[in-house]
Image 1 (cartoon, rainbow, N blue to C red):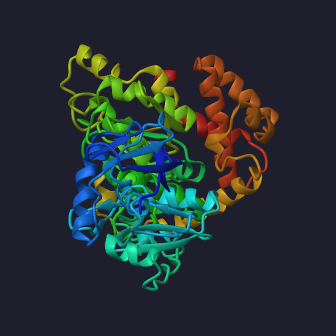
Image 2 (image 1 turned 180 degrees about the horizontal axis):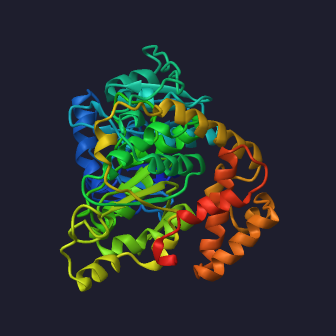
Image 3 (image 1 turned 30 degrees about the vertical axis):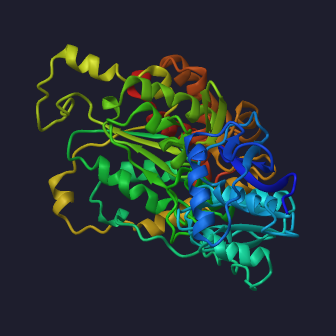
Length: 509
């Protein structure tokens, strides 16, 4: 017996926002046998016809020799990827009468192999969250995705190895238990390769990075080759505060959609540290492509984006960082529409002062011509540099400090102060939608950055003498607020402003 129309539910990922997709299957008894899929799908969806046909036959089901039309509704919504294979197969089985009385409150996601097995599929976590929002009771997915999906409460997760098991479950001929909830332990300390106790000297640099971690401020490290810029950068994640559950879920959704989530990793437990090479393309950094995927700015969300040899990156890439640095998200526009991905990261960049690297070094002479130095430094535009709160000169380490036995603070000790400062900010910004000082807008700066008169006088003098922009003024106040929080001071005082001014770009002077 053939039904007029079968409907099953799936979903589409648009950035991190998922939307329901209804898979409509019409099996007509009249007309020549054919199989077509409509609904603005991509090449992978078009190819699903052959995967579904073979999977049904190899699972012991009949593929009806009829005119089969599949519609992915709404038709004006672009859809991509093989995640609709399972839903299409189930729809054909329902429409052809091989499945009867199937529950309607189930969402289907999964790619089929030709032998009927279900393959690991990208983007399952956001779709599980969608199922919960829609009030659905169950979601059927590949078994390899079950641990990832089971971090979400309120919906039963059923992970299957093949289509045959799915059919047995829907027919109620075999009993299956839902995936147990995945236990999440974010308290466990991440294992970091580097520790601040391993870095000799560089006390000012360590202080600046502590401030950056406490308030989520952007940093530019400038110094000669071998001074320790890269070491400082790679040690930086070890002092960042531990992830909250909401932050971990945000990051995991991005990695799930982009296909960067490991099968064995249910949730991202440590803050991302992304370090793309300077030959990376615009699409690689910002995101995009034919099938739009998040770039490095989104993959470093709630973590660190480290750009070593900053002036060597293409100018287009550097200028494209301005919008996500300001708005904390990135919008990727195409003819088919626009997608938005979160991009709230700490920019940690490093560069040499000149092409040879030794401009201003007291031990080695710079061999660059003035024109070479000028061209090198002009690769970084004023608007980009203005968005960096901390400009830090990293000198070569003195030989006495390098070979000495003087013990330095461990990352764990610094992290305790950072987390204490973050708690102060969390309490301050409760209900405002922001977490750190660097996120404050102008009205919030006015509300929360209470400043002593002598501190304000110093700032006014600096604005005039250093010719600071309005953006620089606000960023100095935000940085000063973090310095004051580290000192457990309610008000911004003169020495807090003085320290913040030291971290402005020397070109501001």
